[in-house]
Length: 139
Image (cartoon, one colour):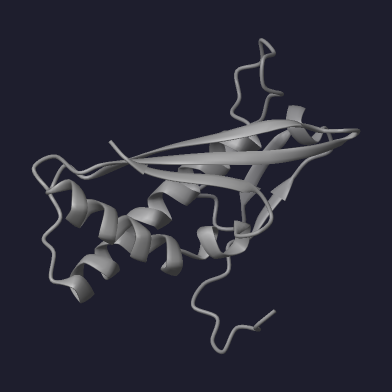
């Protein structure tokens, strides 16, 4: 596993006792959220939603970088829908994910080429590669 040559940013959070039913706050106070277990009546978010939001935001950044290198202009209304599943693999918990790219007006082959390149660049994609089932699709 390669180590980082240079750290660009470090996100720091503290999650209270209670975990999925606790709270999470970043060291700079920009993130201060309640957490709830999926499927319960709690009013908070959950780790799978947070992971989906982070991955889809990062993936758009990777698509922008890939598009520049491929000389492709991305539409202003580019969007990535991320779904992160929490499930069981025998007795252990596991994750699976799907990213669906919406690039209105962009030729499907070009959108697919950018998505494929982004999947090779995105840190979330790299972190999950070979560890969870991931599907990338262009809508």
